Image 1 (tube, helix red, strand yellow):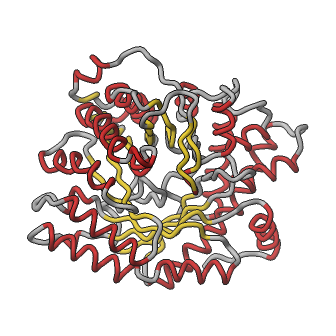
Image 2 (cartoon, helix red, strand yellow; image 1 turned 90 degrees about the vertical axis):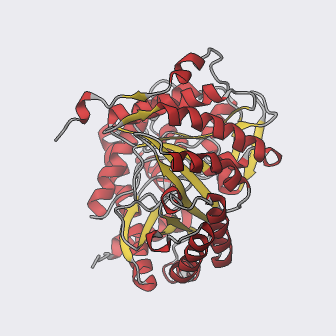
Image 3 (cartoon, helix red, strand yellow; image 1 turned 45 degrees about the vertical axis):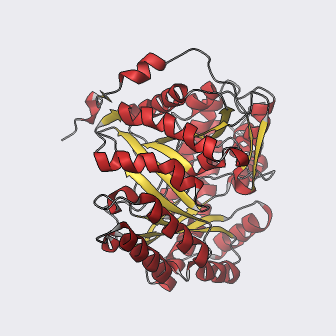
Length: 453
């Protein structure tokens, strides 16, 4: 049992009231292996029924906890077993996606993740069929999110899959062109994907997980930036790191409380607290603002990667002191369209794709929610994915790409998605070609330091 002292509670109340602290998501992770039927229709129906049965009260329970403890809970979500595995014998993947979407709509959740394939070492015929279904499945559903893991430190990078990713992203953009390529915001490509991530679009229920798990993702960049503002500009970087760590501790305790309560009320197992600092387009709720409080004129300036490294390390240290069940991605997200400070930095030319790539070497995920010109080639998108996967593979960390080739848009234009997805300024892409590199295919071998047995 976790005990909370009076001072922790009072400080946390202040963060909730004045500093944009919230629980970004309660995600119920469901195993659907017991839903595999003899036909795609049967699998779809069994999956629909289990989601309705096990997660039917998720929204109500989330609202009860929010009201009881005064903790805003922004999203209620479900993740499921990778759908590529569920339909391995029967196919009919789009039917399964539509059943997931129908269940998600009826129980009132925001998103359902797990339209996923794990192809980091090779792609079987059924997985290729699944990958080819992604554009249709995402464009025909409202709440289904998709991901593909194409690399890992232990296996290297499946470059044949990376090439396919660029092609599918272009297809998905075209199919959702009337929404600014919105479908691409619900699709992410991973290296070293984790099995217990509660955040979309990359959440899925790993094969090593149990039947019904509650994973919670907290947020709180506003609370961290407020803490640094109070600390003052005269404090040295060690004091800055300590203040971030202390604040992350309190943020994580909120997540621990919500996760424990939700699991108990829903008859599920408490999984993890993901303590990632997840920003929003709201002013004052920005990871970029934290970095600027540390002394940068603008995020993207020289020193940005160093500041982000300090932030990410301190967040992890504070979180692991607060909970023995920290997991998921945990650190700091740097999405472009979802962070008011990042949007501002792109608009004034301070932040480029190349600088974002450097930043991903030290943060939680990767190139997230960035828009590029609509005529960017599939090979160039695949090459951007390959670069990000290489960072994850070599550094033994999770990296990802969620990129939107915005139909009909050019550099300087903007794409408005609304809500948490925000506004994406279209960013310039290096115009030199990597086509021959991508067309080689094959597999990038695992690095020597992967041999740890």
